[in-house]
Image 1 (cartoon, rainbow, N blue to C red):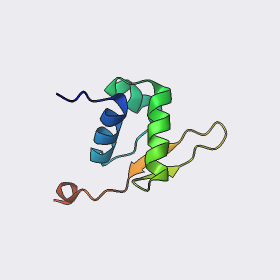
Image 2: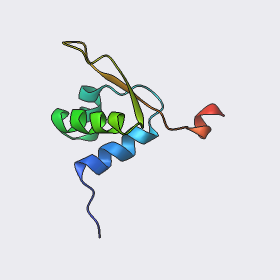
Image 3: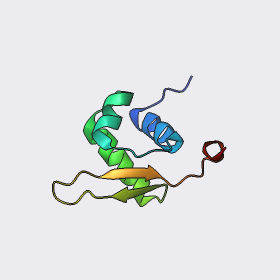
Image 4: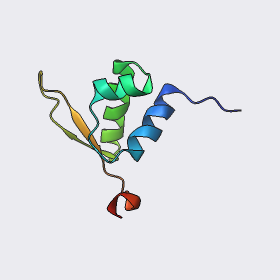
Length: 74
């Protein structure tokens, strides 16, 4: 059986979220390190599946999924 890595967990969870993703709270909620969460969310942003606001200087970054969630519209 294939073992899920922390990054697999982050990708799977982040793509399902319909609200904003704050790296620190997100890391705590799914049980991964903040550094791993930030790195993975940034990779997802660079890949075009998450949008990013903020993240300059001391301003925390906030990510949002760019994946359509048809069930959220119902």
